[in-house]
Amino acid sequence: MPLPLPQGPWFWAKIVIAHRTRELRDMRGILSVLLIVLAGFATAQSYPEPSELSVNDFAGIIGDEAEERLTKTLDALREETEVELVVLTLSRQDMFAPDLSLKEFGRGIFDEWGIGNKKRDDGILVLVLRADQAMRITLGKGYGNKADKAADKSVDRSFLPSFKDGNYEQGIETGVDDLIANLVRPHVAKLVEDGVITAAADDTGSSDAASSDAASTSSDSAASDTTSTTTASEQSSATASSPPKEDGKGGGLSILLWIGGGIAALIAFFTFKSKTRKCPSCGARGTLKTATNTLEHPTEERSGKGERITTCEKCDYRDVDTYTISKLEKKEPEPDPEPEPKDFSGGEAGKKGSTGKW
Figure 1 (cartoon, rainbow, N blue to C red):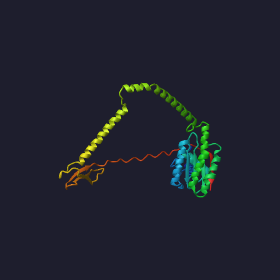
Figure 2: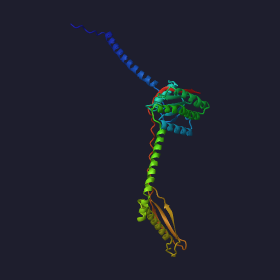
Figure 3: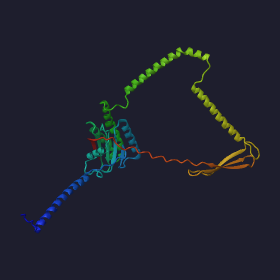
Figure 4: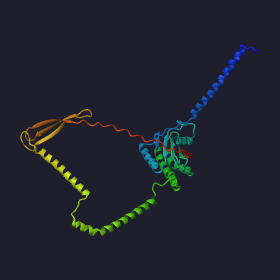
């Protein structure tokens, strides 16, 4: 015989409480997940977007002429060596990543942009923070152990002296030249020596090729002189026994001269005829003068109108003739040039570099 189910109020109250407890546990788990996600967004760092491949002066501390010089220097370096050296100026770091160290901030921008050749990882980022009075040179992970010292020397002797005087423009230009001469050039020379890359031009090979070409040219010239010596008598006898012949170029030139002469003669004839026309009134020759006057200027939508006035210098003859001026040709607007891609080559930052403060 089944036992009767309890129907008291305490029983049902316990059931409701247990159900609510399970709901609260589920909500607590959901809230925990949301908090973790929000915390991730809160700690995620943001970096500036590049506008150029060479100079990104977001702090506005480089003049137009200096920026143009820097851009030409860095573009030429990239074209010649494939080394991507980028200058970035900002006002403050805390606008982007306040929780990072300057070294981490520089590496974060470097990797976010992908500066440097992807296979060699030899990009360079020069980061200058004007309001923070700090700078960081971040090197790609492809640089050797001596790169740190070279970067340190460039910061101390070229960047910081001008920065301390408030001359950011000069400091950046001098520092970039220092980096190219004392860090980039030796690095590229080492890559050529190790066979990682080839030099832009092989001087030895060029000299050998030039010598070979010169020798070949000399032998060809000697052979040509010998041939011309042995056949000189034959050519002279052939010339004496046969009339001169015009080659293709000579014939074409003669035709052009005939055509040009004919056109010049026609122009002279019509000019002479117009100057010697008889005046319809007095019959005098060479006294008619013609002038034109625009009455309505043409546009792209409608034709214009003009008048041709002929008068005689000897009598009071005057004749007015109207004529139509053709519409102006519609000029299609030239398409805007496509902007150059602002993409780097996908390099990665290493741990090497140099920091400076003033």
